[in-house]
Length: 297
Length: 190
Image (cartoon, rainbow over all chains, first blue to last red; front, side, top):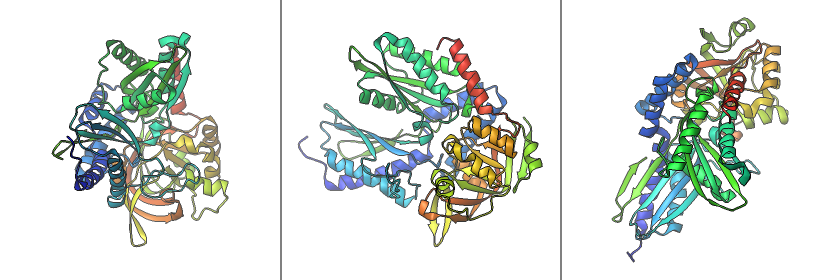
């Protein structure tokens, strides 16, 4: 399609992004709810059960009273896919996403969690220099634009890990690093968590893969059977630790382990861990070729 | 796993009755603070503008709506306590009896809680919706230039459940659980 989006379309996206951000903070995706319910039903530790019941009650209160699940409005992280045939101008779309984030913060209002790393000054907008974080992908042949928002809580983001392992450390070294990182984080990232693992690539790509991994629906399985096997093994090992809900002991430390991989250099074996708290908030806006919008997870 | 209902301010006897793993519900007042608040109090030495004797201090930074010169709750939850670990001693010296948050505190803070006869109360992280309904009102706020990291005074009813994560006898459920978990995965070959 040669015709570009009309200007009104960007204003409509700004409004939709503002709505999407607030909705993501209030309405936990069904896959996360199901994983938490399964965790509660198999929990035998008394403290663990108390915690998982409190989480369930919290989700119900958020639903009934339209409250935020967690007070941490997060770092706004977006994954955007622009279809080749969509007619969307990415510069204008970037502006719409930034303004939508600011509008949600001002109008709801939301706590602004974003500050300068030097002055620590808070603009009270949930945005700043190079924030929101936006990761772009361009999709050949597609007429759609898709915006996935992850309001990323800091309790779990502070528990991020990266290491350049050696080729001779092999996959065994990768497994040890992931398990030790997650269990060593204790209760800080608000377990039961979703563990995102990035494998291979360059240092920057590896960390991005770990973030992409936590953005997947909870419990989704990597299509590559070797990677899927790694996900399953890591999940079992982490849960056998008994660290449990909030790090206070119990059967479920992780709801899922997601691994994303990329080719790497002959002399490298990079591994990254990004953790998502149980409040794994996610919202998806899909914009079709006629400007029609759909909101999901 | 005994269950207790506490009314603030707390005294020594109330704190000494609690053991790691017990569950607590609170009525009365809770003070909210976090990184920037504690830096102002103890690194910059700005006098604390209210009496914290017998207080429960919660690691938090709420979301609020300003109505005139008052602040109304939007979302109040808790944050990770280990970031503020080094401020445990100075808070206890002010007479604080309980520190509440999530994730627990470290070894040195455990010894200080034992020495000053204080406890650490663990909230379920991420459950701000429930906590917001248990906070009746924001009664006072100091240092609004630090928004949202001000010093807050909340009036609460049926606030909890809080799990006694560290008791006044040196038991730290977070560190014990983590050490055991690391032993287990090492035994599995990881």
